[in-house]
View (cartoon, rainbow, N blue to C red):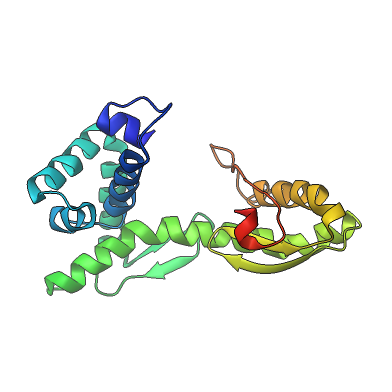
Amino acid sequence: MTASEMFDTPIEGMDPMIRRQAKAINFGIIYGISAFGLARQLSIPRSDAANYIEAYFEKFPGIKAYMDRYKSFAREHGYVSSIFGRKCWLPAINSKNGAERSFAERQAINAPLQGSAADIIKRAMIRMPQALKDANLKARMLLQVHDELLFEAPETEAAKVIKVAQQVMADACHPVLELSVPLVVEASSGASWAEAH
């Protein structure tokens, strides 16, 4: 969707290179990338990168407002929080050293997002063993990688494990928090992690 908006390109049949550029812009901006950094990452002139960043904020003004709000909050309070209230302290947010302050500002923007994602996956992981047991499944949760959970199960249980895992992960915030958008969980199975991707 970002690529479509940024480059005025239909979503259907989109060139993967355009999608890759939009992904770099999306994540880069959230992590506080400069025009220089984006130019280097995309192998484009710095002026083009600066134009992409400016156009991005014009198309998505709510993101700029979010970034400014969290930097301001951090400057005033010295921390930011995940959606579950876990605090990330930022002692360098008001540093006179520009590099330290910039790093803390990027943390102020990123920590609520990454911290909230971490909180959500941890809540799902805590509930998963009991959910598998309640469903009479032999499956075992083996590994967590960022926002993914990897299970080992008999092939005959794969479809049921997927259904249970999707439900537990989609409901990870309940009953503590009601999100304004649903958590969408993609799942697949295979003889190995690579095959399941």
